[in-house]
Image 1: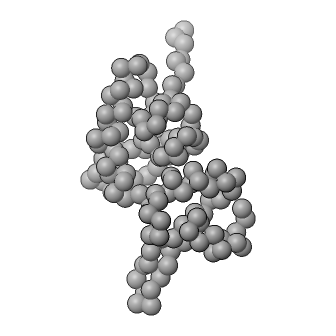
Image 2: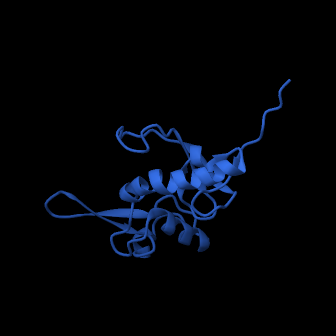
Image 3: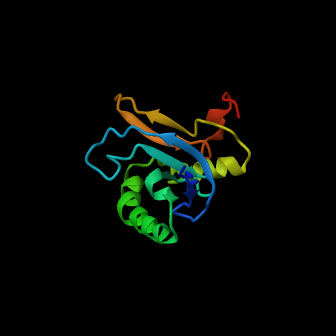
Length: 138
């Protein structure tokens, strides 16, 4: 009987070995780096959502490969499409980290403003406008 090896984790962004969440994803955009990504892992240290295939490793050599793949292939796309506050310009993972450090448990970190013409407005985060989230459970 072959013993199943236990998965090892290391964030290619910050090198943490701890995960916060592991979740399935369904990418609707089929012509970018994330087209075949079916699972992501959120790092417990930097809060970045990383494709599981570059967060999980088997050998030390693979860790360095995963870092290169993340930096050159996935991260540029991630930065291009990631939610970002229009006031402070922080990305969602930076906001989530600060909220976590403040001991606030919240699933909603943004609200979207709307203009009078009916088009979508800008994203504003919980850090920039905490009063807008007063009625929500913290």
